[in-house]
Length: 300
Image (cartoon, rainbow, N blue to C red; front, side, top):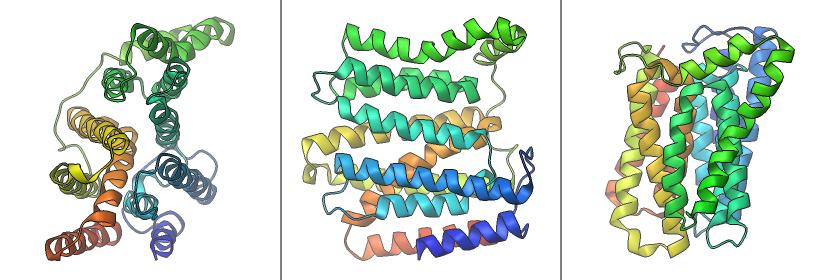
């Protein structure tokens, strides 16, 4: 059902021009942009499913995490066409896929370097994401792998993409572009969500409501989870909260940062729907599904 709903939303938005598609730079043709965007987002859902399987994010081994991600992608019609924010989402998932493996690992510095290398590649598409490096350091600490060696590895991982770009920039005639990119790291706009479209604001609040409800449920029932799972979900809660705060501060970067919010929201909400029981949980799930349907099909 999630796959059918997502495909219908994609058809209505990308191929029929319905559903509040925002203006974007056409890479190939509108149809092929939408088709390739679908392939990239399908790869993101697959990566999230692999993360769920590899690190046993759910004790009952169901697929609510990847299905939730699929529904969030269907709702966020503004990221459907092929564009750089999809690269950020893929890099972020690769970052998680590697980072979660450093817990009690003898090769933690290697994993830290590789994970932050993926984060560094993401910052090439959106320079301001470099500030998430601070959150990454705290995440490494939560996973009990922070040491001087791991800190240096994390720093090198973020810097390496810029080292290659800086070395090649003079040969490619892009020295000025490289310096402008570095300047954008400390360039911030006005906070608030007023500059966003109705579709983007509704998507933000629906995802935020899902994140808060699922996060509260996790901490209320934290004793039911194993130690390794708790460490992973601490990271998701920290990264998700940082993504939503960053999005509030920098709303002009919405299409870059919201995919990060979707990833963490999908993981927490998948955990909630997989484990929560009772009438209140059923009511909350029904309300969220109704809001998702309204945002997906009727808000532009």
